[in-house]
Length: 96
Image 1 (cartoon, rainbow, N blue to C red):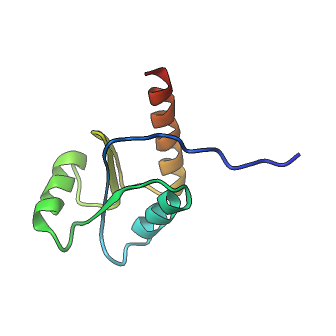
Image 2 (image 1 turned 180 degrees about the horizontal axis):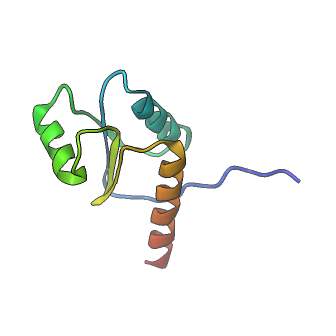
């Protein structure tokens, strides 16, 4: 019996990923999204002070990565937490 990876079908209008250069967790988050063909806007909070302030306002902290999926926020996470967050988003969208 072969287990295929789950399909990630959340089609959100806006996905922003707040990142910092040389951040291992940020690299893992981008890789996770890229591997699943999920389109997102990477936002470098070190290069953009306004984006850094926005990330703090959204997440309540200075740690990255932070992902914003249409106002649903997940902050300071690794791939497992991102997968769980994404599954919850899929379930919410399935009910709509």
